[in-house]
Length: 167
Length: 364
Length: 106
Image (cartoon, rainbow over all chains, first blue to last red; front, side):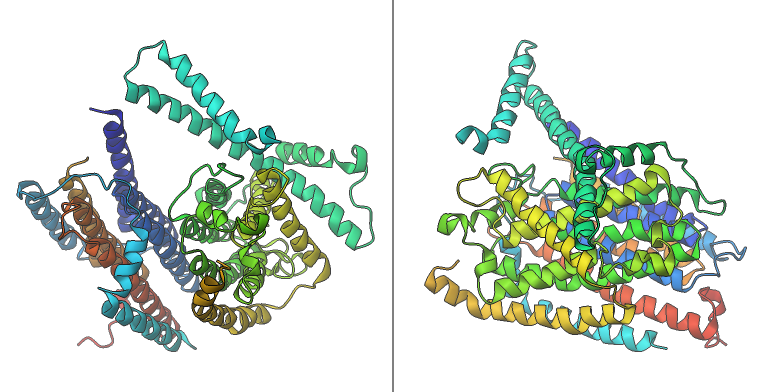
């Protein structure tokens, strides 16, 4: 095994551990603020996974949108709805056993599918091609309709959020 | 002259060859040898960058105290050493030896991690700045996006500090800081988009290279009218983003003590202070790279040009601090959303229209 | 290169954790966090499939990355609306516990 490959494996397991531990903390931590910070950790781990998959653009967008915007928005919402975390209710509701069972069942099924399916994969290197201009061109040619729909969606969400959250 | 021009790349290459020569005797596999050498060289670059951060911060505090004192008709620090230049070391010793206080009801982990989380993104940005010709520690094809993404993480540390301190001033300061930084990030990014359109590249190294004509003066700042508009919008938002007067509401002493770092002392407070000045340096360095041609310039070595331009922008920021009063929160928000964002948006449209003209007359 | 199933397993694990959080947490904000985790898991799969489809062949394109971009856009819109709803509920009902928001139930 070449050193590069060993390093890739090490990086993958470290990043996967960050992501999964972050996710588990989100699901089980009592303090909602800590859960939000753990969510940020998981997002950063996922950004690292994208880098490992040589999708630098998606990785940067992940950091910018998920960590820099969505997670900060969640922190803001937690602060605005503060004062309820001190109640001594357990963080999980009464269906937690059923929910856990379902999640576990789904996980087992997905693992089975992922391991047994024969994936027709290619593992060629990307040969240092700069994909960023290509992404830009694709967005305004092949995918121009979804692109415009996405901008309308964002505008609607913007107006909707302002109207809903206004006093 | 040529020695000075390529001083740092030459040192780098010499060290690289030296370590290769050192390892050749060990008869390692070629990939192992190149791996170890690149690891060592990477470590050297990282240590160098991390080591200049406190130096930059300390010298900038001294410069700022002197400049603001001059503006206010005072002398500034003048007791420790000639012109008070050793004041920075006195301050450093004070910071390192002070007691580290954690409030009784603080969220200990969040309180502890906040200064670290504030420092990390800023230090990471230092890695993509083109400090001189061939002196970008990492030339990323998404350089500009990398800078924008990492600078948006600055809010997280401030939020953690405000919440983890369990102090109402810290909380208000943290909320103000986050609201302000998010609002001013929008015009800042929109201003950068205009430059990315002109350059046609997201790589900071490429953007600098494109500004090399006219004996090193074909800067994007001179791409009238879009360059100057983008520059002004960027600089105003940048000053707001680093929480400096007149946008220093998050830590306005007369209103909320010290904002998010009210409950910090000793070296943890020092880290916040360092982050603030490094942030100032980074936004000015990015402005110099995007608008003022980075290291391009005649006669002087490129890395000196880079520092001259960056320092000039920092001095402008200090001048602004010494001149303007603090504005109100509603004025702050209004200014971002009703003035800067529309101007930046119109500027992008203008850039799109002007691009063919610039290409036709050879400006770009 | 790392085999593709590694990434798929990571995606599956993150998705199931997110599913559990969305189904079992009481706090509405935490439910939203679970949904974000699930969207992230989907994105891991999209980008991994993009990377492992044969590059260089004529059928190879950037669909995986661009789909991931759209998912991120949707996630941003969803988070903004979701959090606005939670804040509106908090204002009128003084709670963020989803079990207390049941006046429509009979």
